[in-house]
Amino acid sequence: MKFQNLSVKRLFGRVAMGLVLSMSGITIALFLVTKQT
Image 1 (cartoon, helix red, strand yellow):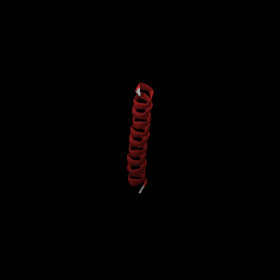
Image 2 (cartoon, helix red, strand yellow):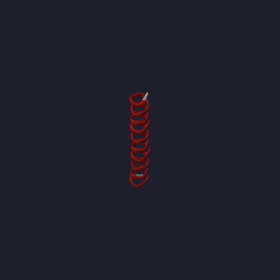
Image 3 (cartoon, helix red, strand yellow):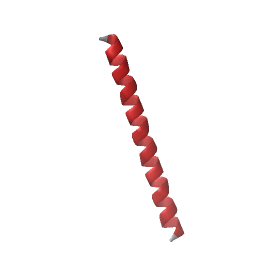
Image 4 (cartoon, one colour):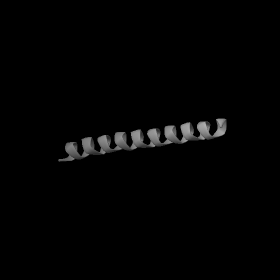
């Protein structure tokens, strides 16, 4: 039970990090595109 909870927490953290990275990447891309035009 404890081991499964740990793996779920690790998976959730990895997904959260991926979401934050993708969101920041999209924000930076939009900022660069709007700055160029």
